[in-house]
Image 1 (cartoon, helix red, strand yellow):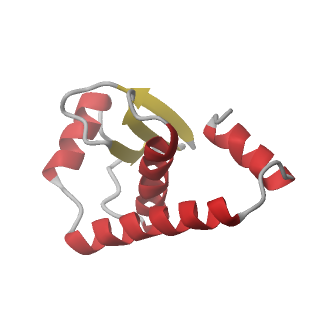
Image 2 (cartoon, rainbow, N blue to C red):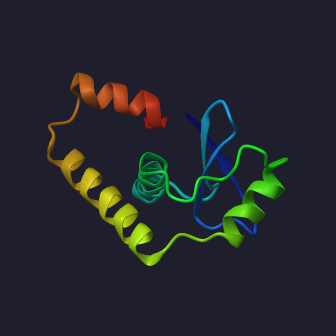
Length: 112
C-alpha cells in the first residue's frame, strides 16, 4: 500500500484505488495529525471491504478520480468506513505510548 498526499480541487478528503499491482490511498495535502489518520483509516476500510474498487484499467489519476466521483460509495459503506476509522483511533489512544506497536505504526503512517 502506498500513501500519497495531493492537493486537488476535485479530490474528496481521501481516495483509495488499486492500480493492478498495489493499493494507493490519497489524502489531501493539508490534512495532518488525527484528521489525516482518520482519512487514511477510512480509506483502508473501503479497501478491506472492497467498496467500489476502481478498475485497474483507469489511465492516470484524472481517470481514477473521475471513476470514483461517478461511482460514489453508498451511505452504508460510508458509515462503515467512518465507524471503522473512529474505533481504530479510539483503541489506539488506549495503548501506552512508546511500545513496539506504536513505533511500527509510526513508521507505516509516517508519524513522528
